[in-house]
Image (tube, rainbow, N blue to C red; front, side, top):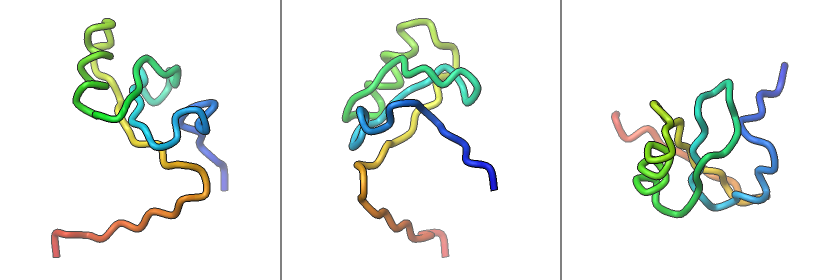
Length: 69
């Protein structure tokens, strides 16, 4: 199975939200602890539709539960 890397240097952004221009252009344009601020900062930098996601800290396991059941 092929690995898809969302961003380079992910250790640098561990525990933060990051915004990229798209899933193809993976350069980080904004990062921080508040996803709304990260999104708005990317928009202010001219990114039309930023992709915002959380980068977990290294060696931290995250478990998600489907709350829709």
